[in-house]
Image (cartoon, rainbow, N blue to C red):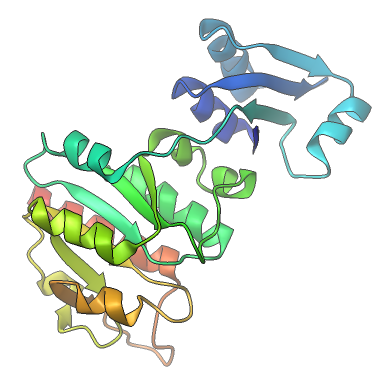
Length: 242
């Protein structure tokens, strides 16, 4: 089972229809978020248990839980065909491909931005990537529960599948051919974000249709990957809504 910590992540997991085994709430917790958790758990027929501070401490194991912990049976992962099929109804589908993101805080922040931007799915690599843990779930503010996430062993093969289904692959690179704002995103788009230190791998970049970059005005040559992802996703949304 997977542990979910924090009031908002637990509430989002319940409301998403995730298979929650049990929710633990420490005695003395109150407020609007706690009331919403109780109401949502009742609505979805999920067991909720109020426990003593000592018992809750044993369950939480010193995590910053805001007095709430839930256990989900498992993280659901989708196949790439599921993402393609589900996004086919959209005029301009948008998928996010993450090439070896290793920091769970970065992954959680990226997934939060992805959910807010309304992406149709996220593809992550099985190897050299942070797993979906309670830390990722909490940092994502519950976005994990609302996203279609696919894990693949071979990202290049996934890119090939997407191309066959009409997607254009847009990769991010320090030496990109054009600035991100010069790109026309009014097309089925798969945005590729790379590893925190090395960026996207050489073979992955060679299989991108376009390579873009964010102009840097200071002395540091790149943004944190989660910040860069937010910048790019919302530029895509801005263009498509204009």
